[in-house]
Amino acid sequence: MSYCKQEGKDRIIFVTKEDHEAPSNAELIADDPNDPYEEQGLILPNGDINWNCPCLGGMASGPCGSQFKEAFSCFHYSKEEVKGSECIDNFRNMQECMQRYPELYPQEEDKESSQAEASSSSVSAAPTEGSALPPETDSTPATSTSDSTSLIDNQTAS
Image 1 (tube, rainbow, N blue to C red):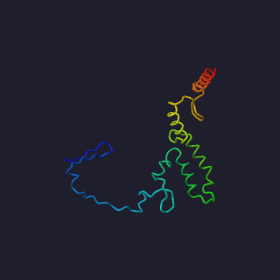
Image 2 (cartoon, one colour):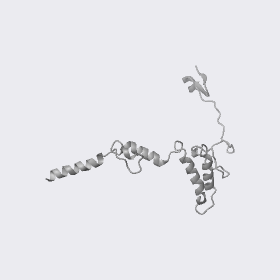
Image 3 (cartoon, rainbow, N blue to C red):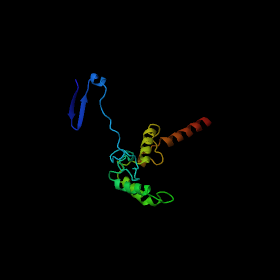
Image 4 (tube, helix red, strand yellow):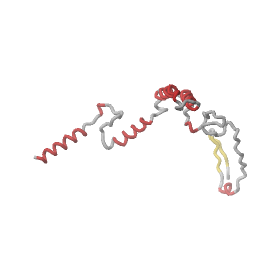
């Protein structure tokens, strides 16, 4: 027996195997190319930027949305020989804003260094160049290993 129930904003429809065996009578409606809410891609047919495009990953909204829009618009509409060369200040403003919200806009080097630290911590506790480990957590096995190697070499040489 088929039935439907509402849970909050969601509607859950349970159907039987028999319901699925019957051919569908749903009518598909052709896409309207003039529908302003229809997915159009990044650039709309009139050349404007579609700020609702999922390809922007939400960058046009949030705490740095206005800086992103200014920088991206400047680049998109740029007529300079080196496209976007006049937009450096806009991109700098956007970057400065994003640095104020590292939890929302993690930088690639942050992701890479945290992944590298996680994988290298099992190999060596010595920090690598650019790691975020404070100096007091530096371990000395790397230096003692080389000292112990030289002691072994001296013992075998004598």
